[in-house]
Structure formats: structure tokens, C-alpha cells
Image 1: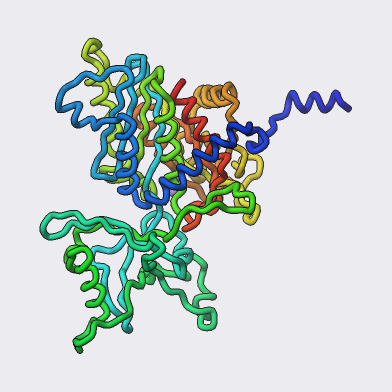
Image 2: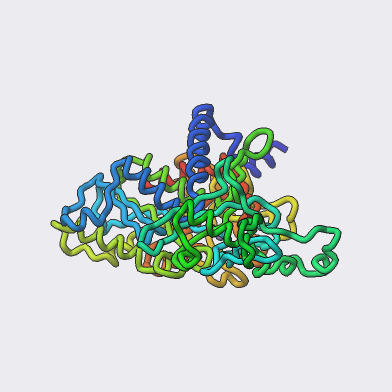
Length: 472
Ligand code: MN
Ligand code: MN
């Protein structure tokens, strides 16, 4: 009998439960990491806010803008810390390692955009004495999750005089919040007969912003006028200025602990700000690495990594090419392609944790689970791996060996059952540059919902994973 037990122990693969493995010291460290994450997330609810807070944090830690370095044509030295941002919506940072750049760069690449409702260019209108804002949803949202729930307004407006106005309303306890209405169950006969994906339409995602008509005026649109008057008093804007704005409607409120044991964090936009923040924390804590390290925080992943701030853009290659030029003073023959082809990226994105309420969507053997450590996805994509960047077995070996050697709890999985759906990450766009890449990140429940759930121990293990990878 015990022989069989031994055989099993030696031959079978067992998933490890990460909470069981934490030392007392690690429990403390995990608390610090997770508390820091919640704080950062609460003030970073758009990609712009994330970039702004990233710059603030890294400048405090000795990072300087590469644009300044480049202008002064200073060569970069070992240990130098630099960053480059573009359009206030994407940013890359690097710490120069001990080895020359053509030995490759260790990169962590995540995305800082999240599903949300954007305001249309001319959003404000009034109907039945309610002033509302028209929205256009961004990314994969289940529309029915966005009605009858507290919302906040975040964004920027460029006024006629060129001044940039930043708006955040709905996060402070004293602020008002905003809401999209839903039909009461008593009158929902028509809605109940619809497919769930059609029960709330895109054009009905109109946000209530006001309800008091302006007095001493008997014209129409008196509530709309109240709203515009208040906005004008506070921000100096007129209706036309909405055209020069990027304003996002996001769930109001802070990240909260979930469960009586506080094992989970519930928050809007874990996808993918959790990997973004953890990557940031890891590179700041890693010290001077052997190989140069990059953290790349991309935009527009949720709509296909398009645009000049998305991962399909030239931005990462541009960043690497400047680093190559500025570190090549004595080593003139370093070519940016050599650097990229020798580099490795952990494409840091969340993945779908097995959900006991929806077992049928998953294949239990090949799912990631809450609390079982950092998730590794060899490939994503849909149907016959369409759209996947399938990591090589060599790279899988390299990454899993590194994690094992450092006692970091990891798990492997894929996104649900075959033919159940699917999705992608920035991995394939990094791969296109010649970078060896694999998806590594934190399993979530409720992905893309206004309240996503992540396990604190998985967040901590992912932090450790990114840190040892940067140091490797
Ligand atoms: Mn993502
Ligand atoms: Mn996503």
C-alpha cells in the first residue's frame, strides 16, 4: 500500500495550495504588497491615472524620463533607471543591467486599460426631466452588469483656451455618484423574454447626471442647463468642450477585502492593473539585475491592442531602440533586432479562475484556481488556438524551473473548455518582435465585471515570480 503511495507521490503531478506554503514572514510581506496594490488601484481608475501615478512613484525611486537623457545624449550606465511615456496612456520603464543589451532584456508586459463606458463626443441630453450622458462601451462588458450600480466619472477635457481639466467625481464619500437605470421587475415582461446579452442595449447605457431644472427659465432643456451651469462653474467648460475630452464611466468605490478571512480582493479593473502594479512593484524592488529589465504597460488591450498606445504599435520597439543606442557607445555593433530576438517577456495578464458556480465552462484539469499561485498560460486564443502565441516548451521549462528553484507556487491552465470561447493578450504582439513570450498572471473570478475577484496569495506569488524573473 505504501509502495503505491510512494509511486503516486513520485509519478503524479499535484497542484500546490499556496496559502499552506506561506511562512509568517511571507504573510507579512504579502499584506504589505496587497495593501499597496489596493491603495494604488483606488487612485488609478483610468489608464491616464495609472500612468500619472506610475511616473510619480518611479520618479521617487530614481527613474528619469528617457526624453531628458536622450536630449543630453548621455550614455546609459549599469543601474540607470529610465522611462518613456506616450500620450499619457502607455509607459515603459527600464533598469540597465550588468550585461550588455544584446544578451537580451527580461521584460514584463501588462496592460492598464480596462473595460468601461466611454462618453460619446456629444454626450449630454435631457429627456423626461432627467439629464443624461450617452456612452459607448469599451471592451468586453456584460451590459446588464452596469445598470443600477454606483458609477463614477473620470477623465480629461481640453478647454477652448488649451487648458487641461482633470475630472474625478464619485470616489469621495462626499461626492455624488451616477447611475444607469434598469426596468423594474414588475414591468420587465419584454426584457425577460430577451437573451441575456440583449436585455440591456448599448444605446440604453445612459448615465443619469442631473434632475433639477434651472429656475427662472421657461425654455426647454432646463435640467441639462443646470448640469452645464454646474460643470461650467466647477471646471470652466462648455458643452462643446466634451468634443475634446476623454471621459470614462467606471464603477464607483474602493477595492475591498472579500470574505470573512479577507483572502480575496474585490475591485474594479484587476484586469490588468493587478499585473501592472505587481510588475511595477517587482521592478522597483528587484535591485540592479544581470540583464536589463523592462516593464511595459500598454493601452488598448481590451479592444485589440490597436492605436498608437496599444501593443501593436511601434512603442516598445522604439523604447528598446533608444536604450540600444544609448548603451552602445563602446559597443557600436549592437542591433535592436538582436536585442529583441534575445529577449524574454512574461506577458503579464489575468486569467480565468475555475468558478464552482459555472463548472461547465471549464475543464477542471487545465484550469487555474484561486489560491494556487501564479498562473501560467502556455497559450490563449480561441477554437483551434486561433490567435494564440503558443509558448515553446523550452521557455515553459525555463520559467517553471526558475519558479520551482525559488519556491514560488505556480499553476498552469487554459482559458476554459475547448470551443467554449476564448481570448487573447499582448503576447502575440511581443512575439511578432521576435521576443520569446509566455502568459503569466493572476487568476480572477468575475473577469470584466464591475467587481472582479483576485486572491491575495496569488497576487503575492505573482509578485515573487516577476521579481525573480527580473533578477534572473
Ligand atoms: Mn487582460
Ligand atoms: Mn480583459
